[in-house]
Length: 290
Image (cartoon, rainbow, N blue to C red; front, top):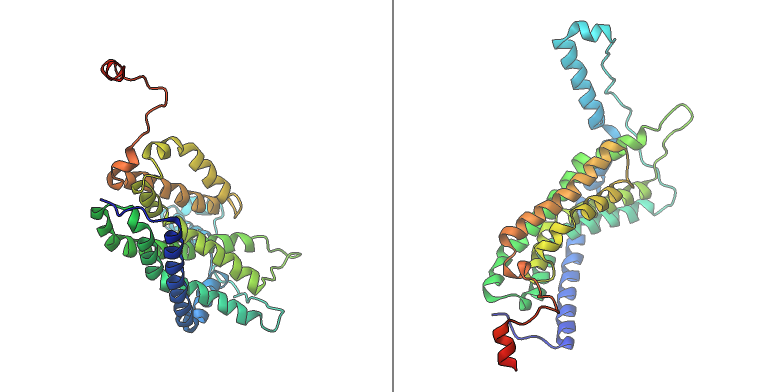
């Protein structure tokens, strides 16, 4: 059985308590993350100093054709692309701009370090709405939620972010030179970093909502077209077709994974459907009522 329903004011007090603990954990995590913030900046800048994934794939493809089909390579004059690229530096114009950027990086690192505590506090807040046998899932909720967020960040930093940077630098020409600003570059990266972390949390979030009875499996199954449309809309704001695919596929992929997770772990609440209001009573029930 779930615990007795709490009064509204008690809910607010409980929420306040969980927020305070989460903010304290975030503050401590940010202080610890300060030591690693410059290393994090190096990781964010890596696509500026390395050849893009597309260029490396092109390079490997040309090598394979030259080795296996030399006549074809000679006929089409295939030449190896130049992988050497001059490293680019980020520019800043305000005296304290690097300091504030370092603070932002520390905050994101602090969020990742404090994520287990934040997830645990979130679980404690929603636990009163669960049955007793469902509360044991806290042992999966915290580690799975943390690993999902980190996995989304790793996927973004090493797959999506290099593609976005390469697309941006592709506009460089004799009359157009990229002068990348430190704050704008890092802000754009951190915004997408948090977004991809949350995208990979989607199956866990929808599973919790399903077990609480807020989300129904039937609803998710009917909204697949809308999920595809929203994934494409979000992806369309970022870069070329390849990068759009790298953004849209994880978005919709997490939606499908959510459906599978809810199907097997959602419990009875995720499948309950309300009876239509105009459903007629059975004959025996009508006679008993009369």
